[in-house]
Image 1 (tube, one colour):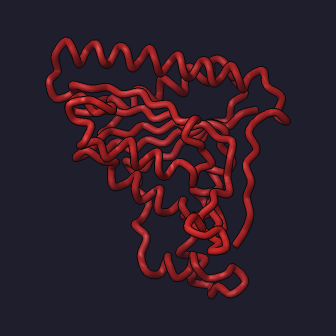
Image 2 (cartoon, rainbow, N blue to C red):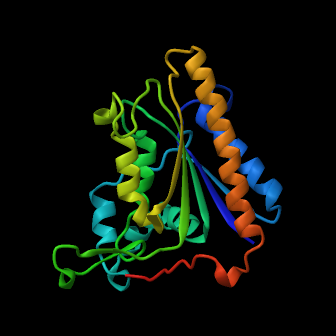
Length: 234
């Protein structure tokens, strides 16, 4: 049985959010192909995780056996979010582009999930690259909507795209390699013309195709052959 973690980051409600409609389509298609899938939904758009603060940092960088009682309280949400990531085989994110980057709620989620001893290790003996991810073998599907267009490499607004590079840079905290990221985008949302309508239709088709392909690979693959998640404590 596979586990799908669905994350919605849009501030809009379902009836007005293009990314929420795409994640819902992905889930329906995936579960239709692999009906025994366990789906975990996390709506950071409507219920944002707290921003990290000095207390979180103090607690996260204190060895578990040395933590005071209050530290556990400040790490509780982080623990919960990380456990969801650890359990997931597939992570699908509905991510609108806000001011050329990711929504603040999703950045808060990443800050809660990227944690020493839980999703990455740190060792200066590795030289200039001391950070190493702990999790592995997961697949990330990003379903995005952008008001403008041309954000792909070589596009007219490629230099303004702060969203895709940020997601790619943080994916290793989730156990996702750069080759295991697939992105579907809706563009021209502000123009609301034929180009936008065509972009929506294409995104819906691609979303369903990706969900069907990934679900098929998990539906008929023995659990021993699936990506393994590694988890160690600080």
